Amino acid sequence: MFDISAKTRTARVATARAVLAVAPDTIRLINERRVPKGDPLEVARVAAVQAAKNTHQIIPFCHPVPIDHVAAAFVPADDRIELTVTVKATYKTGVEMEALTGASVGVLTLYDMLKMLDDSMTIREVRLLEKRGGKSDFRTAGARKIRAVAVVMSDSVSAGSRDDASGRLIADRLRAEGIELLDCLVIPDDDDAIEQTLVRCADELRVDLVMTTGGTGLGPRDRTPEVMDRVVQCDVPGIAEAMRAYGRDRTPFAVLSRGRAGIRGRTLIVNLPGSPRGVEESLDAVLPAIRHAFPMMDGGGHDDATAGR
Image 1 (cartoon, rainbow, N blue to C red):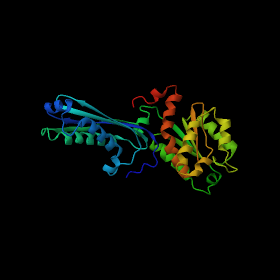
Image 2: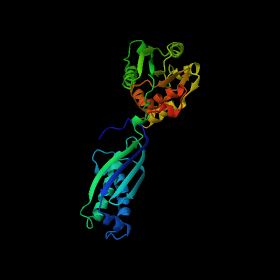
Image 3: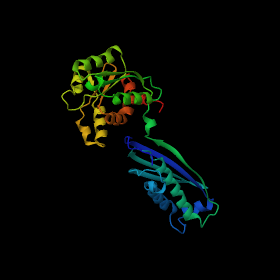
Image 4: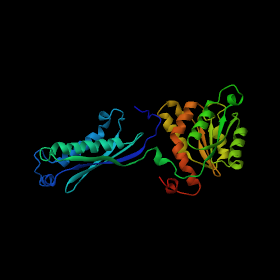
């Protein structure tokens, strides 16, 4: 199975359609409720719902998904029956296979119940009509380039006694996301150094994003949150809350992080934990939202930020 442990939960929707071609007399028998095995539409509706909920037991590499809703709708015509299945879930992976499986089993159930009456039946298509809620839906289409600086706050790294793994992780992830990384700075856990660096990035370099790592714990030299009071003009608490919530699902120690996020001028500053694992998990949690922030900071709304999606 594909590893989805790093993904975040989002609202997912998928709709699939299956078409069964039948003889006109078969449609008439259905409408007159003269099918010997019972009402094929209602039985197929139950079969479609059941199949969607149990897709992981039918398709080997599908994950078990906590389904929130399944709807199966039929549209009988003169020579065919169209079945549309819509599946909704709030989870880490999409539900297109659940919708396709529901439509497939639903139309096969129709075939089974009608085969004694119509040997001309043909399953014409089973196809996905729509899916929403995946990673691509949260990419900002056509957005301007984002310019960023990474700042490593660590006495030991700045002194050369410890390797800078966390800074490299930030740099690699930002580049992978298509964000232009101007520099990766290393400074000690010193209040004045932190303040001067963040102010310079926002006021002089005028970068869009500053990602810091380190100084967010409970140690005597962990001063990043306090310095943020002197730097940012407004907080963006949801970013820090999301990082802690995401991390807490993976380790209880995540609740000890005091990282913050805020805006100075037109620059978003985000404090990540100091550990490589904390950095990686925090970026998994908030990168989609961070991309969405810049069109809003430019004066657009949510619709502008997702235009062209």
